[in-house]
Image (cartoon, rainbow, N blue to C red; front, top):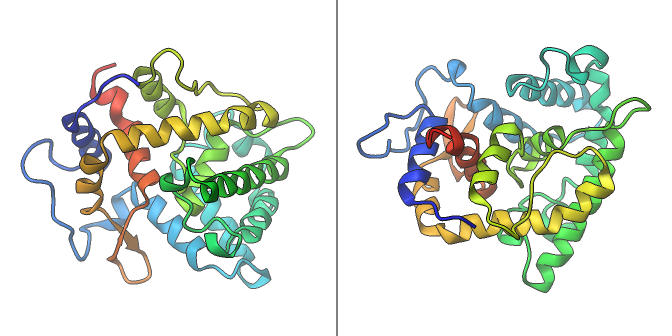
Length: 260
């Protein structure tokens, strides 16, 4: 990987959260001001919903609406996109069924809690990566139609919003990753073929883990300040965002914050 600094990390994450460019990092507030105007909280609202949803018939309508609004908030329903032109809320039912099948904790065969620490190395990690890969294939199948296959962006937006287990690999993140990778590192080009996506997934996860591990203390210093917002109370919880979500914030802004 190419070098980056603690200052790069802090600048990018400040911009993602609309924090002041200089001065001490904002303290964890018990209640955000004007939360209804903070687009970044769309992730918290979606994540919090799926952490607690029973994912059954009684929650089906809310599950669809939460997932759909989160995707819309982050630009997936605009212009000539497939989601805008050719789907409605019922389209998400297949994806939500996959989410339900993997909604248990990691120790119980699910993906709740899967994060950068589990991206590879130990035997248990490989089992979890295989489980993640299986869920990826099932989600891709659930989102595919006869005329359209889901993009890398859509796949990772959903996985990020529901479990916070991987950064959303949209155009902005991929631009940042292109700047950060060296020859021989994993590439992150858009690809809609599920076999192609899965063939490079372990290498991509390994590279994402190396980015975080290279500056773990710098990332963790900031992660300790960013708690998950609970929309039912209007307050922040005591739980920090997942590591993959913090890396998502960094990648979303790194390329633009460096002027690239």
